[in-house]
Length: 156
Image 1 (cartoon, rainbow, N blue to C red):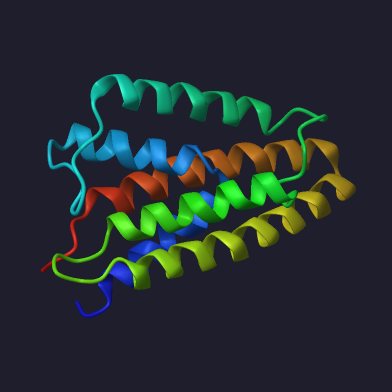
Image 2 (tube, rainbow, N blue to C red):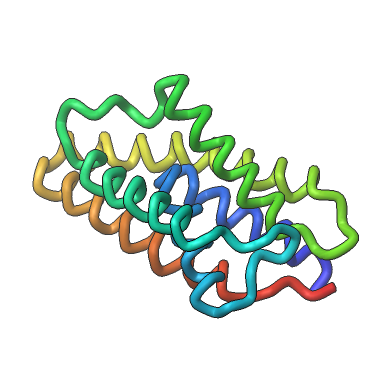
């Protein structure tokens, strides 16, 4: 399919906007389990995948804590946009410039960061319980959709 890498870059970028470390961890571990490696980069060694998974687990817990800074703060926002760009670039088709998918990933991460922040804030204002439940829904979305997107290989 034409532009398949751009759709995948946007999807993974959006997930990075929700979980900056979780999305790359899911991609790295999904690709390793399928023994395919990433399309345009070598697979991460097991120790790096383990570290990335540990950081992602910390992110899943930290996201629910009341003193965790907002995802729209500059450092957090930069991490999310950078993560989206990295994931987008990894899924460029063979022979395709990585810049386009990276930009799509970054833009999707930026949009998803603000959208998920707004939705989460609104949910917490309505009900703290629902707000925290939405955090778990975000986790499930990143894990499930990330594994699905990472598991398919762009043609080319």
